[in-house]
Image (tube, rainbow, N blue to C red):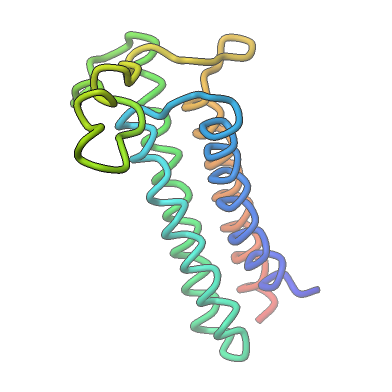
Length: 161
């Protein structure tokens, strides 16, 4: 497997795993995301699209490499948002958003009931931590590690090309 193929695979699997973990913690673990949690998901979704496009253009290494690079940038952006969110959680700085609410009702008739019963999800209070690191912190760590690994693979591929 070439280094470009490895970078392409990592550019697809890393954001898919991180986004999958976020969705599992929400739908299986019952941890409702706050607004800043959603912000961290969007770049991972973009990275997956870039990586899939890179697979589609795998016969054109120049374009594939550029798309993998963009996927790594998107992953790093999610990591940066994760750092910001973790900083809000640890009270290092103030956030720029209000709290958000949990899932909404499927129809308008139940909307008021859903609003009244929805949990208040605060961006400045982590719902889960491990060793003092919140989910936002873990997203930052894993996102930056993945982006750096992808860029390193691309740089190694560039030297060989």
